[in-house]
Length: 70
Image (tube, rainbow, N blue to C red; front, side):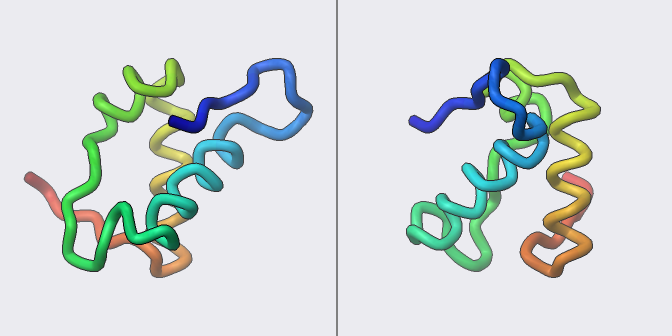
């Protein structure tokens, strides 16, 4: 599993975005799959809710994810 590097000058949200894109492009997640929730991503990568939301919002704005209420 890829991890975020808190010592890197690259912003945490961008590191998470790259991890999620890798999963999408590597077919770990396919079109129509439900990805982990914000809370699950927070726990999995040790990030704040704000960071996870920023990442997911950016992916939604780019058309890579569709956000629906569960």
